[in-house]
Length: 99
Image (cartoon, rainbow, N blue to C red; front, side):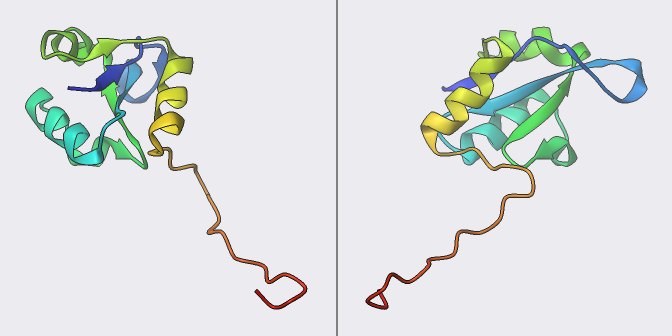
């Protein structure tokens, strides 16, 4: 399993601190892990789940590897799974020869 979680450090709803849960293998693996953890699909945001501090220890117990926050984004990029906020679709611009 290639699931990672950063320490709860991000302020969020209900006065809790939140972590980011990712997979560097696939979204299917991430969704399956989140279900096992008991995290609602509504907590999925583009390429990660927001996880409240109350579930951090359980995530580790289930096998998520603890990593620094900066590692989360790096692993997503390296795996080609990063989905940027407000990302614009790439448009091919034809060259001078029309290709």
